[in-house]
Length: 87
Image (cartoon, rainbow, N blue to C red; front, top):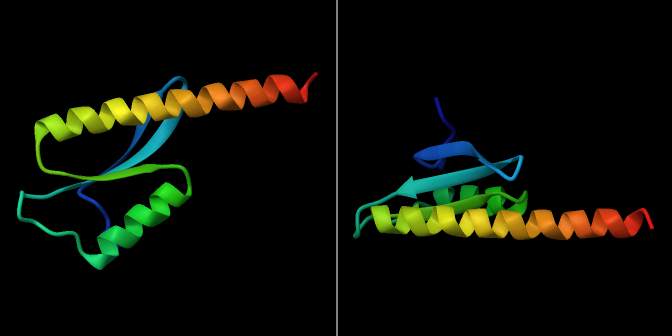
């Protein structure tokens, strides 16, 4: 049994050698997030994961593209910081 507020999909998404945590709540165009779902999303994002409420395939494609770009950007910043710390 999942805790209240758990999104419809929670998974690790492999990007750039990392496993990025994503949560996706699937709603109809008139569906609304519960307060528990909003809180789950805030917590997931607070630990570096990604959360979205989606209602179409097009939104899902844009979300995955965003997660990929953002993760690669974070990875690049981390690599730069690592290089600088060893100089």
